Image 1: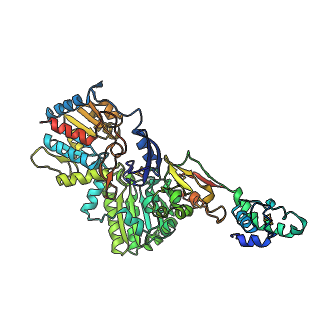
Image 2 (image 1 turned 135 degrees about the vertical axis):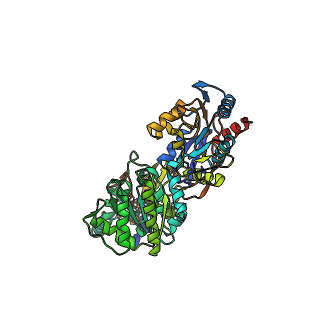
Image 3 (image 1 turned 90 degrees about the horizontal axis):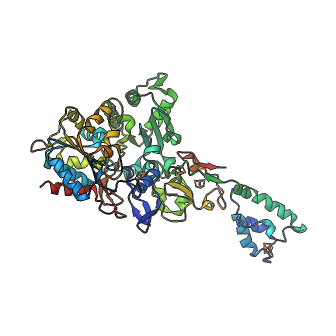
Length: 151
Length: 422
Ligand code: SF4
Ligand code: SF4
Ligand code: SF4
Ligand code: SF4
């Protein structure tokens, strides 16, 4: 399930006081990306917003949980086969040619094989993380050597 | 970063990027571990730097003169190797054999050159890997384990890429592995057919009779449980384009001819049933296919070519081993191969008694036992040239750094030797 910024915005105080350093809307965007905490808004912790605060906490919970999950790559096991690089939907989104089996040449991908082993260079682009938060595990599933572990 | 072609195996990956700083390669992108090891061995301190004559360092000029001398004075020379050489170097090898009225053979005659020859005689089609990428919806690795031999085979061409008729990549394809043990490739395969050693032919016969509508309801087929077998057959019948990649598990065992012929019958049977099917060998050394093709183009024969008479000759039952064991040779020139460690003991013993000249970039048992050793450049890293990918596509190799001082490519060394014969 995706959390939209609008959904969040509706529950914010909507005063645009900028105490959090943002407008309410951009604060909402940051919350969905996991780049801000609810407590950054001083109004929310006040009694009058208690109900909204609880609701927001509930909505954002799976997101914080996704942050607690991670992806580990054991370079000792990896042989640089590139299965993870090519199968990863985030890699394909970052570089079109990856879809056709070609190794990436840019810096936007999640994985890239460097000096014979796969390196995670942009973990935040993994679809398990916000904003997508999809339960993808195909890199782990198709690794020949079980070098990838999603936990 | 500079784009280059990897010569770590016959996949010849062309999307490899290297960073060069002060003439040294400092970063490599997209190559697998095997490819990286190959590139790194070019700047290893362990590589061969000096020509030697019976273990004593000599100059390159002396080495070439001495080699030409030995060759001119030999009764009969065997020229051998070439699966790790460019097409141009292979041509020069043939030319030298012709000049010396020697015997020319390549490492491919004991390996997939043999398969390719049989496949062409059986008139099997030879598709490109790009065609497999775009259209093949069922990939079968038979006696082949790319997870450990050709790391990027599946990710670059056969399994993971999204192609025209297989838009979801692996989700649009079926992957089957046939082997005598659990392999790493099986970890990602849908059908894992573990057969008993040497029973490939039985499995193929069972598949063929299923295709012809005659079911064999035995408990297991060649060691494969019936349930696994039936699951595979159902997917096979529903496939549009089957690609079989066979490896040393098929040809490196007893009676490879029988197994290959059966496998090719299966390919034909599937095609008869309107299921497109192709078969390609998983060639190892980066120019295994070139050793076969170039020899064929230059001499009309795939390997084991005898130049004793004016025109090249080849016969089915004659290969370098039979000739060697009969004592036909007194001299052997080895290019980029290590027969003393890779061939059976009886053959190796015979080879070690010959006058040996070795051209190689790295130390080997054969190089250490040879009378004359001539170090050469790493083709594809320090020298250019062309090679044939495992599916027969011609690929231009790139020179990305200079070889060490006074070191030439095997092609150049062979040219110099030929010039010195005059
Ligand atoms: S602190 Fe809260 S109320 Fe004030 S602008 Fe930020 S989000 Fe809006
Ligand atoms: S879990 Fe999915 S999106 Fe994330 S890195 Fe792996 S393949 Fe890519
Ligand atoms: S799939 Fe596994 S072995 Fe292959 S490159 Fe990725 S981490 Fe390495
Ligand atoms: S699969 Fe072969 S050609 Fe490709 S990078 Fe690995 S060793 Fe080099």
